[in-house]
Image (cartoon, rainbow, N blue to C red; front, side, top):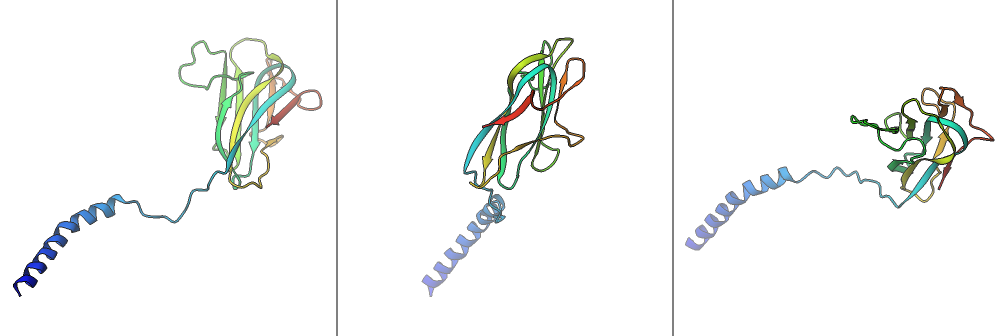
Length: 175
């Protein structure tokens, strides 16, 4: 009988000691939500390029992609017009690059501008690089959205005029 009482006392003591540890572990362990993050199968980068432009001072491009099959992972300035992110310290900046990812699901707004009383740039150049992760091998390429206000795609000259995009002046996404 003494052995049973001693064993029972030891078990109760052990339970009393382990109870606080289990409570701490339960509060530190995050609950399983059952929602798995989608797995990115791979990535690809598209270059946003302008070709045969004259006097480009500023630009704004709206990209559309399927958020069910693509995930935006990174975007960087291309440097042709817009090479520095707009920040609080804008001393001696010649051009800026801006972006907005909160304009809607599957939408990305990018832009760039020269700064000051300077002429626009001529020729061809890289405006931005955008990297996407794909969640499925069956995905559609992102597209440039033309003509939808308020975030319409447009090119502007140094005097503020809209530069028409068409047969002569191209705006392209290249992989």
